[in-house]
Length: 174
Image 1 (spheres, rainbow, N blue to C red):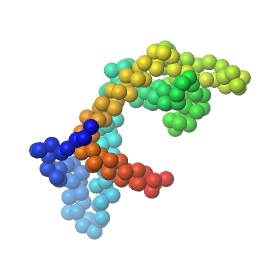
Image 2 (image 1 turned 90 degrees about the vertical axis):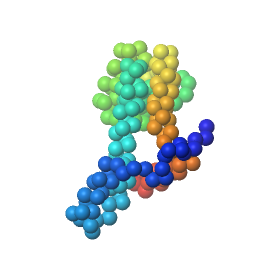
Image 3 (image 1 turned 60 degrees about the vertical axis):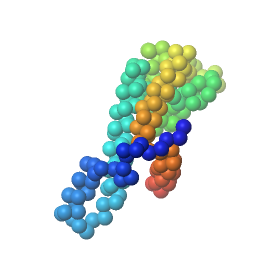
Image 4 (image 1 turned 180 degrees about the vertical axis):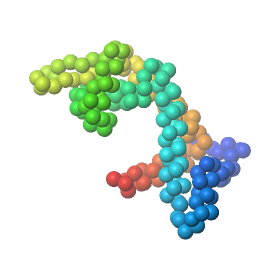
């Protein structure tokens, strides 16, 4: 799918709230280099806006973003869609306590099941149920649709360029 810039979209967008903040700093501290603030202020605002959009998309399925993350991680693991609670917690960067709460809710909803690990008597396995697999499939589509809708403001080339720039920026913070 190739997107081109809509006819009415200028090359440089109209000033936004971050521009207003930058102007205020320039007035009181003209010595500051605010480029980082321009980038990270927008990244932060964009992250919050997209978190709200995806949360709304997942809410239609009766799950939160965090619960979607569990289902999606299991789905991405491939058949038989099974991981240990420890693997899930590590992938999602959660404490085991935080993971337990999510697993409890998803298990009560019939979206996953916990069972003894046949290779470790002390361990558990978490597996998507058929209902959980179906919901994960639908929810990932809804979340991507919300993200794609927001990304429509950019051409395909701009979106690829932005992804590359963000990848570079993330690599520099590791």
